[in-house]
Amino acid sequence: MDAKDILGLHKTSFPSSIEKKSRPPKESQRKPDGISREVYALTGGMPPLMPSIDASQLKKKHNEKVTWQWLPFTNSARKDDLHLYHWVRIVNGVLPTGDYSFAKYNKSVDIIKYTDEEYEKYLTDPMWTKEETNELFDLCERFDLRFVVIADRFSSSRTVEELKDRYYSVLRAIVLARAASSGDVATHPVIKEPYNVSQEIERKRALSMVLSQTRQHEKRDEEVLIEAKRIAELRMASKVAEQSQLVVATNADAEVTERAVPGESLSPSNVQHPPMAVPSPITDNASTLASLRMLRVYLRTYALEQMVQVSNSTAGVRTIKRVEQTLQDLGVNLKPRVPTKAVCAEHLELRREILTWLNLQKQVQYKEAEGSSYRDGTYGETPDTPKDRTFIPDSLNFGVSGERVGKKDQKRKGHGAQPTAAHKRPRKQKASDL
Image (cartoon, rainbow, N blue to C red):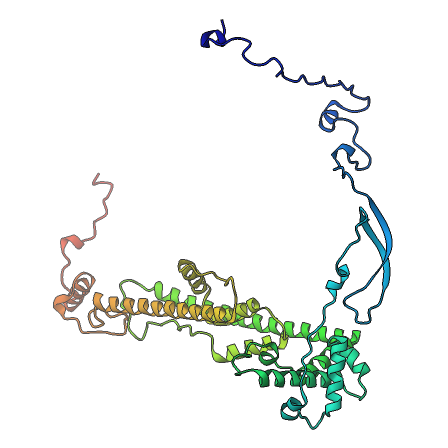
């Protein structure tokens, strides 16, 4: 019994014509000799020496007859209606239509045109005649603003800069004259960035000077840069030496103050306050900027490092570490990620403020120590030096002072007085006494 018997269906309910197509048995291929089993399983056979394409995978184009014919053509980019010939691919005898395929790459510059009235009203120039201006614009349209070629073909002796200046000045005057208001053409390139003749001449002069330098000039410039770098390093080394001396002196003063005897009181004359580190002076900043200008080209990060070293020149090593720790606590990078001019200025200002705050905090600590010494005892009650001698009454004498007074009283007595028994010398014993 099967499912058809349970459902009450006939076993021959489906037509016998529908049968599964039997797949043809695969032809067993024998592994060729000289190839490992793994390579044969991956590639399915010998790898080809050259790339090959199975012909069955190519799309077959039916009912297409392709021929090549030698046919004439015209180019819309040309105005002389010149007929040229080339080979054309023809499918099923249908000739191709349309413009020449490479005519779309013909790009031309739109040269502005002006009338005689506009020239007389806006474009008159004592250095240029109308004929020269017309010739200039004709050549600009013909050679697509290639001013080097235009200067070569121009009738009079004009430089490239003069031709550019005349063309862009005329174009600027025409654009302003035809606009309803100056605000409408404020974003036009000719209006926004006008041509500057002097700047162009200076640029070409500097470029020619650089390109015409000899090896001796280049070597001399390198020596100047090396000497400037050496001078900057010497200045930095001298500043570091001065900084180390200041740090040693400051630490020595602090240790002397900390090692003071607890019983002694500190007077205002004895307390030595540490010198307060002032942020980088104006003279140091000026000298640093002058040394940077000698390099001509430098990274802003290098300039920031120099200014930070100058600002830390009057601070000790511990103070510098505390400044860096404060920056980290505030979530500020020790070196800005985007070192622009404004960011570097704010970074230096923040370092100076932190340094001033730490120095003020140190001064407050010294003042608090001085105030605590005043609270513990006054100068009159506990003198700090033996020079302050005060009168002590006899009633306060005790200990050693009392013993000295007793000895003085004994000296005042007569020398003939009998010594007491406690002071008698023992007699020597004889043999008969034993």
